[in-house]
Amino acid sequence: MYKVDFSLSEWNFSVYFNTLEDYLFYKRQIETSVVDMKHKDSKNETIKIYYQNDKDLYNSLLSKIKKSDKKTISSFQDEYYDLYGDTYVSSKERYLIRNEGNNTYRMICNDFLKRHEVIYLIREIYVRLQENKKSLFMHGNGIEMDNRGIMLLGNSGSGKTTFMMKLLDTDDDTSYLSNDRVFLKENRRIDYFPIPLILANGTAQNNRRLFDYLSKKDSLYDSTYRRDTLLHGEVDDKYALFRNHFFEIFPNCKNVESTNLDYVILPKINLNGDRVEIREIDDKSRILDTCFTPVDHESKRKPWILKRDLTDQELYANREQIISDLVDRGQIYECLYHPDITPQELQEKVKTKVLKRDG
Image (cartoon, rainbow, N blue to C red; front, side, top):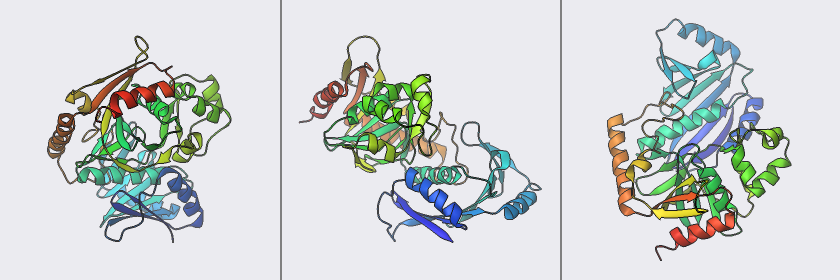
């Protein structure tokens, strides 16, 4: 038995493999996809995941559970899981997952499976653990500038990733926390979510350092990126960068997995008018619109292998309280910007209009 250990926030994870081949394959995936947030703490809960690559066991279990009553649920968009008691059969019957209780899960696969299912399971469990601690799953990015934590919120296409890239394209003291998903906690801290940095082709073409880096790569490990996409694709074509790629592109940028939240910015691309316009806002509805707890409207994610401790009504009430407190405290800004603005121009505007307002 081979094991990979890491921690996410206040939970320890141990993932076990029964073959050396699977261990080496998924160890690389986990190390690429998941940042170990701190050293293992014996006081924290340990989540155990057993990955078994065993075709005979898989076929035997699948044959038995097909005779049981089942309920079909949706989790991710275009993904469905068939529920047999505490066992889940993935769409196209690629693998089985069992919740065995006591923070223990077992994934049983056919021997040809070489995909990201282990990472998907880790993420699913982690979202529910955070929500059980009353954290909110937000549609946004997290960064630090001048030692201040900033959450960039916005729905798909708003321009938050392009905005973030410009803020981090600097020789100053900046840190990258998370892209597209971030956890907002009751104590005004934000935690990262282990997901690749999903880029639209337009974002890559808009940043010199990013474009220069990608134009020299035919492909990237564990990514949908191909150089032909960058050079000849549509602006909305998307591909993934992992954290190791990110810090190769921006070598002066530091890594952070959790930080205090000082400011919220809602970026939005504006092709008309001034190059950048920043104003303070107190529109709670716009913050609520970017919250994926308890309903993830974008990926249609639903709790499947780990159920929430709280009801939807309790989660809605908690969401209302956290976001109301956030808005009441202030320091929430809307930023309209032209995509052609230079990183230096945008950084100076943010530092002047946002970071220096309180002192």
